[in-house]
Length: 349
Image 1 (cartoon, rainbow, N blue to C red):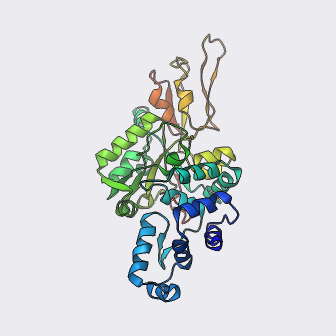
Image 2 (cartoon, rainbow, N blue to C red; image 1 turned 45 degrees about the horizontal axis):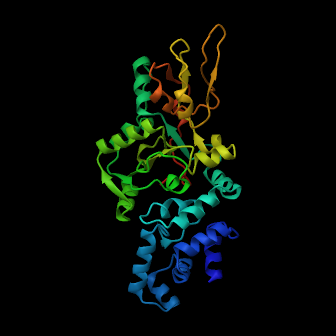
Image 3 (tube, rainbow, N blue to C red; image 1 turned 90 degrees about the vertical axis):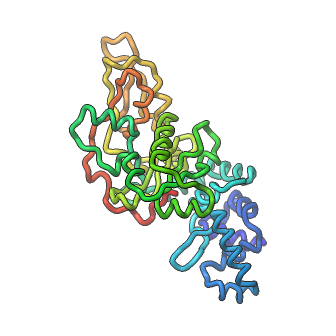
């Protein structure tokens, strides 16, 4: 039995992790593990090799796939090649074992796993994922600028332009980390990825209006929109609405100082009108990137907001709570900041 789980852990690039071995033992029986280790392989060959019934094998494989333990490849169903993907696909299912949830949380909070994720999500030249600004901040930008907002950097235009949208029942990251009170039903999947999640019964089909409502709710809650780093509209697979509290991308990136390699900034940057700023400080808690501080400008009796341009990712979340509208976005990066082609390695489910 130990050899089965060790073999599975090796496939996921963590052969010596006690956390992963315990997780695998909880989510998969030894018999299922032996089957998984033989994949991908035609059912006829599997049946002969394992001395099993073809029908039962097909049923077991489908069950493993629905539980997020297998992925569909051009060669057939196969086990994941990294624990990062097992995390995302297996933790969105109904009836998650609390012990499994705690094991994942404990493991992610170790330097070993968080550093591994940070390295996996860091692109060689450009990050694999990027942010888009909030809809409210883009509306404010359009009122004062003649510069066009590109459709693939407007979250509403993205959901309007896809054929099928699905809303996941759970955010895998927040469900495991449990470090905040942000909503869980915020992960939007598109087209074939939406079909996949619907067929696994971990998501439901929603309309464009419902998707926009999810975006609005996420922005009001202080979440940032994260998606594939590409200007190729058809290759945008999903919009994840994330927070620093438990996001499997932001959390490791901040912890290991790899955010610049992990997440591409928007083409925008938040700026402050000091005269309009009332010093309420509400925007500070909204910033997921620690870019906002309070300073006392020369000649002022009040503390005012200061936004560090180096730390600002241009998400616009701070604007949602700025009642005097002292914060706005300015365009600071060219169109070519967003690459046309998405990396094949990039994956956000």
